[in-house]
Length: 478
Image (cartoon, rainbow, N blue to C red; front, side):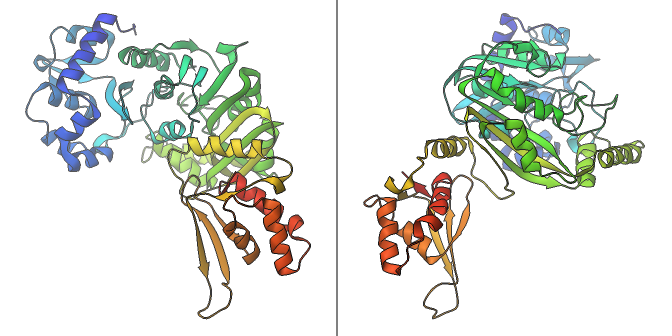
C-alpha cells in the first residue's frame, strides 16, 4: 500500500468538501431515522435516502453503506488512483470500497478517518482478517474523553490503530509520534493524517521499542488489551502474544521511563482478577511510587468475557465457536482468573500514591478535565487542612431522608452532579461542616465552632480525613 500523494489528497478533500461529505452533510441527507438505523448497523433506510445519484449519495453508499456503486458516478480523475491504492475494487462497471473513509467531527473540528470497513452491517458478520484495522469505536472515543486537556510539546499515541487519538492530539501537541505493530494500521494512519493535513511521526514496533530513549509529556494508548490464549487466529488490534494482562502491566511499569517530569500516561485496560489476589494491589504494584488513579468501570465473569470477544470477532454461530469458547475458558481457569476488570489507568509522573477503585456508575463526559482537576487537588493538598478556607462546589446538592416529623434526618447524602457524580453519606456534623464552608472561616475555625457547640473535643481527628476526601473528590474547593 503506497502513501497518498499530495495531489490525490487535494482532489479527495476537494471532492468531500464540495459534496458536503461531512458529519453534518451526511446527517442532513439521511435524516434522523436513517441515521439512527445506520448507528445500529442497518443500511436499508440510508440506502433509500441516497437514491438521487449525486456525489454525496455515491460517497455514502460506497463508504458508509458498503454497497457497490457505478464507477461512472465517481470522479474520473480520482478513480484510477483509488483502484491502484486498493481503496476501491472493480467488478465490471461497479466498484466497491475496500477501505472505509468516513467523516468524523468533535466539537468544532471536522476530519475524515481511514480504517477497514465496518463489520456486521445488516446482520452480515464474517470473521475479520488478522490485521484488521478498527475504525471509530466506543473504546477509542472513551480514551479521547479521558485524555487530560493540556497543551504539550510532545505526545505519543501507542498502538495508534486508525489514528483517531493522534487526530485529537493534533491541536494540543507540537510533535506527535504514533506507533503500532500492525503495518496495515500504520499505513491507514498515514492516510488519515495525510487526508487531514496533520504532521505525524509514524513508527513500527511493540510497546516502547520505537521510542527508546525518548520522553513525552503525554502518552495515550488504547492497546490490544484483550486477555486471550495464544492463538494463530488472533486479531492484532485487540490481542497480543503477551500472557494475561502483561501488555498493560508493561505499558504502565515502563511509562515513567518515557515521560517527562510531570508527564502523563493514560490508557484503557483489561486486567485479571486472580484468585487470592487483590486487583487493586496488583495495579498499585505496577504504578510504584507514581501518582496514579485506576478505575474499574466493569467487571465480567470469565464466561461473559469470552462470549463478548467471540461475538466481536464474528465467530458467534460459526462451527468453531464452541471449541474456541471451551479452549478460552479452560485457559482462563488455568490462569486462576476469577473475573476480568475493564477500565482505565491514569499515571502522573510525580511522586505519589495509587488510588484504585471500582466505579460502574454513570459519569460526566468528557471526564478528562475532571481527571486533571482530581490529580491537582490530591497532589496540591497541604498536610495541615485546618488553615484552608473551603467553599462548597457549585454542583453539590444535599439529599436527606427520614420518617416524617423526625428532628434529624435518618440519612444525609452529599451528591455531585459533575465529574464522577459521586455521592457521599454524611452525618449531621459533617453536613453541618459542609454547610458552613462559604470561604469566610478556615477549616480549623469551623471544626472548633462545631466542637464548642456539640461539647466535643475529638472532631479534628474524626472529621479531617473525611474532609480531605471531600476536597479530593471535588465536593469542596479551596
